[in-house]
Image 1: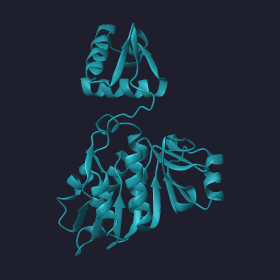
Image 2: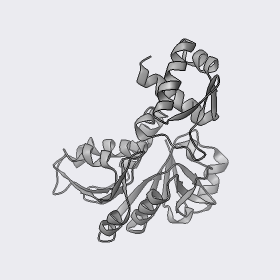
Image 3: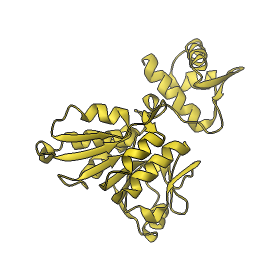
Image 4: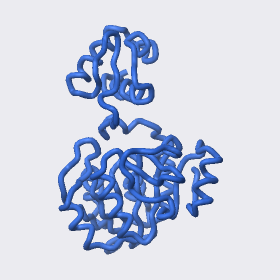
Length: 259
């Protein structure tokens, strides 16, 4: 296992459990305790965790992994979700994409759709995510609009009043939201309030709203509310979604697509 893969695995375990012992992590990843100690020390230097005697704990109360460490989590589910979301978008539409690993996969799924290979434009994509804009900018058939704003290191998203100003001037057919939590009662949410504010504005400018979220995000709450459940038209998730949770979303008027 490479160092990058090991670090991703360690951080994922740490987020799930809140605390990790050296011996426990070494057994799970099938590496030596000395390797784990070295990894913990180096991650602590980057302020990705807090070193403790014999292990590590998460850094802070409201913890969020930077995007570069989240790409491998539930990868197959996210790719299936992304393909299904991409199929909901018609040629020529104006699409808003928030940042996140699932919405990045949506951008990739749109990029390889055969019927979007040409057009003037084949699709208009409005995004506040630098990585998504970077990936799609090489597609000449896509019109890419970047919101502007101040870059947030954890998610590569642009936030703040500069982004507000651009979004206030556009109208979208569909907004695709990547979320950290989606609950039938409390709605869709993010960790960061400034990020949530931009995502909320994308929703307000769109004719319809699609939440792209794997089943681990459902029934959860997070600090910053993006929008209410009744403002969401469609939820695209994976087949591991709890049936009772799905029924609650459907009762709230959300169409649920499980793939």
